[in-house]
Length: 240
Ligand code: ATP
Image 1: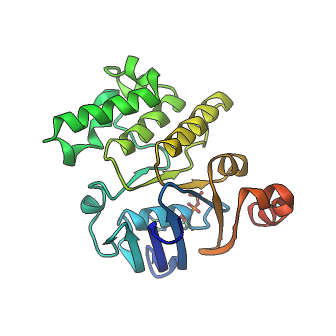
Image 2: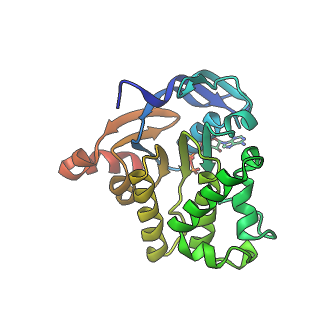
């Protein structure tokens, strides 16, 4: 896995104003691997995902997806099958139908209707409830169902790497379980995931490796096994 990562970041610094929120970060995600970014509020986790998508203007360092250096690419190019994000807060168009929200992920594929249909089918196979709700306005969906749409929209672009920003936040235990099982199913399908999480239990269930961020830097790297055999106290030191 380590020999040909699907995502490789080195010496990344990124921020918004006078200061860098993220400083000199290096991380990698192998093909078919799931990696978590843990850390307290304000550590810079979301900023890393936004930098990968090219949504943060101020970024330095190297970001490579597959064979493509995306460090200087604009977001619309990166979103064309390289990386996709299920953002914090889900960011759906609530006055649009479920299916229209999903199709937004596949705008760059709209000339290949067969492929779009195949992707839609795979999203509805992953979340059967969305098939029933396909013509419903997204505002009528529960928080968990809206999160399914956000994940589905990400799948619709058929990306090399999927970025998920706290998909478990503010969901019921049942909905969290559905989202976790969906991520595990994506892994079975061979997807590569970078998951930002505050919940250690979710991260350890889904991921092969965990990075811990604090004050804009990566301060620890561990495996779920290490967390279970005593690493929890290290994590709690950072996560509080
Ligand atoms: P959270 O879990 O709260 O999202 P995080 O680890 O994802 O935390 P970021 O969202 O990356 O952290 O934010 C890191 C820092 O950057 C915070 O201090 C935040 O206030 C600042 N920040 C985030 N977005 C912006 C922005 N658009 N403009 C200016 N500062 C920002």
